[in-house]
Amino acid sequence: MIEKNGIYTGTVSGYGTEGEGIIKSEGTTAFVPFCLPGEEVRFKALKTKDGGKIVYGKAEQILRPSPARVAPPCPVFGKCGGCDLQHADYEEQLAFKRGLVKTALLKIGGISADVSPAVPCVRQFRYRNKLVLPAGEGESGTVFGFYARRSHRIVPVTDCPIQAEWCKDIISAVGAFAAKYGIKGYDEEKKTGVLRRIVVREEKGKFIIALVVAKIIKADGLVSELKKRFKDFTLLLNVNRSQNNVIFSEEWHICHGDGYFEAEDCGIRFRAGANTFLQVNDDVREKLYARVAEEARGADIAVDLYSGGGMLTAMLAKSCGKAYGIEVVEEASRCADGLRDMNGLKGKMFDICGKVEEKIDEVLAEAAGKKSVVVCDPPRKGMERSVVRKLKTCGADKIIFISCNPATLARDLGLLTGALKESGGALVPATSDGVYKIVSVTPFDMFPQTKHVETLVCLERNI
Image (cartoon, rainbow, N blue to C red; front, side):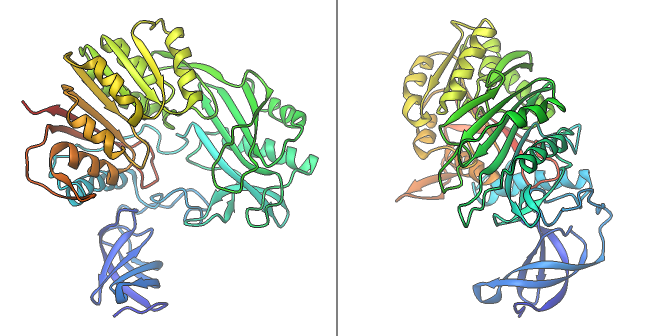
């Protein structure tokens, strides 16, 4: 039996859901990060559970490396909690993500489905258009970085290889401003300091830069620093006095620019603010949304649940008779209204602000008796159980599901397809024919170098 702090050797037989290697040794299943299938690994047991049957370990030495192993380009890979797979070549990453989706559907949803090969990203690095960077107080002053795995300890960085090239310029500008004006990073434990986070969104060279602070500060000096590096930007202060981990408060101040930007993507002109949801990868977003619009083409009514800033709703309005979007974030819903007007979609695109579970009935009533499609792009937690129940009886010809979490995707699909049923508040396996059947499952690699995957599932109503 494996014991805590012991050193052991084993061969990696496969992947865990977090992208870690699975090693079966001495009656124990060990989960060891940064290992690849087929590798012989010497590892240390850091934590045990279930009487030692489950072990969480740390790789001490790769004794026999996989042909798929590569040298990670990031100097803090393994320390920072952002990336999981920089040690694997890209083909191996895509294979892992395809397998992750297939396994989740089977083990969680009870669904045996063909899963297409993952759609790759053109750029495996420098692909992110959004940056959320915590700030803190280090030994030599204010530091910026990403949290270490399963902690809020900041790993300082001056750049990040999966972020766009402008990442280092943002860190440089805010760092120079903080040093010059004595702006200290926020200490979560002591509740001292001012600067909590930098949040940046970029589209086609236009930037929204938000500084999250514990109290209001003068930001003229930061505007000057940013002007040295960026041409088209708006700077916002978000004053967040709370002691929780919510990124933004409701208190906003515009320090420079209009407070939003306007851009064009996927043939849609749009306006976005700091809190507007947009997919973080332009290349894969374009491929994903084009596929959704094509699948929905020809419907009389398209319903877009969890619709964010309205880009996909607008694309659906162009490919269908009408499109209705439901979004709970007020800023995003306002941006969707502006997008509708900018693209000449009045009378074809309708934006409803509110919770999906509270607004879905009125929207589905508009689709009743018409050729319709429902598009669902929920947050990581998946859809509310009440929403799934309503979708089962909505009568839509197609349901198109976009998910960034294979586990909650499998759960929701299990209910929609009849592979799962509710029993006493729990979900149990079922064998009945569901109202909807799966036509295709396609992973999209929205997040190279990480364990995360975006998945598109197309369902049709059983006749």
